[in-house]
Image (tube, rainbow, N blue to C red):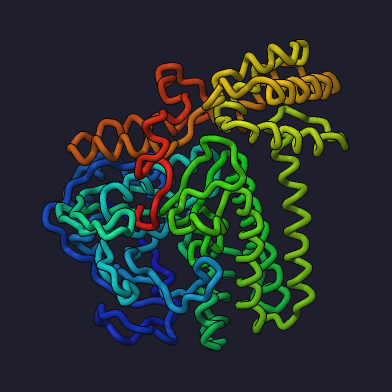
Length: 521
């Protein structure tokens, strides 16, 4: 197995001078060297062929013992020094101080085809940042991360990737719902990959400690290796850097809203500086279209990270990053202007995104009202978001509103409720939609194809992941591969997989892992 290892983060930035794994406050350093924990009996469950290709590896490479040991933490790759990153963050709106990689260990950086890939194990043991935890991961959360990160990539959503999923052979004690019922589960390890795993919190920790020397070192490093198009470090470059991060964050969240993805825990330590979806914990996909839905049990009361609030939280998190970068810029009005632009640009990008979901190519002033009225009617009764927008592509502007409603009959969880005023509201909307489509110059088949390119047929619904988890607990990993193959082509019809193009089954409505999830998920 040959990897073109080109470590930069742990060779160009200050390291923790202490070397033990004991939990502690780490100051004056961007990371701490750590050694992954040896596991009892590692077993590879699945690998991503696409990520193997990205790293210059082959399927044959993935089947040898060297690969297994390296990507389960049982051996260290030659000429590498694994490490855990130091960062802080706001959690649910409150400053939490030092957080850091509590159960993630960075193995190395690899260059291939002019791309940089940082490789990171999740669940490979304790680090100085593990606090009261063990640094390990269980099979259910690892399956969810492995499948979803690759699924998001194929949906066209900026994301971290996943190379491999393995069992550790160890048992891990977890209290799934934090309700005093801990149980032992199968331990597992995911190897994640990204250009970088830098988060907003990496910069916040230095600013909070008034360590401006290392804040500048980290920002300069980030610009040099990940934003080099902005030029040499300077106050102007720092401003441009923040603007670029704001734009990337905006684009990422627009994609989330487009496909109905809810991150569930948008703390600043879970926000990638590169605008990537990072840390797949209690995420979820909208079943019924609902701006107020969050999958996170911890967020159940206040719903801070609900679907409809994700754009606002993106802005709030960017404000915290602006505060962290301010000592290097010292120009509040300029930073405020970028934050104000985010608001304006998000409204514009959101309208463009919704037009694309409706197959509208012309920009008419009435579109915003049409979209608002659709969002209102979608919430009159529980209406499946993914299936609705996919089936909407079948609606022809020559059809009657009655035909339009009949065509989406399967999207309602309680179709008997679609009567009276609700039925009337749907007829009114379909009439307006048909009139609007009449103004388009694009032909029906072309519009349908365009709509199908932005409205996926298949997403990783929580119940699907849970079914794979249940089978994996029994030692059957075939469903993991089936979902992996399905989600590589989420916009294609794939008739052989039609059984997955369906609403969440009723048995999954309140089942743990299928509706609400904890941060342990």
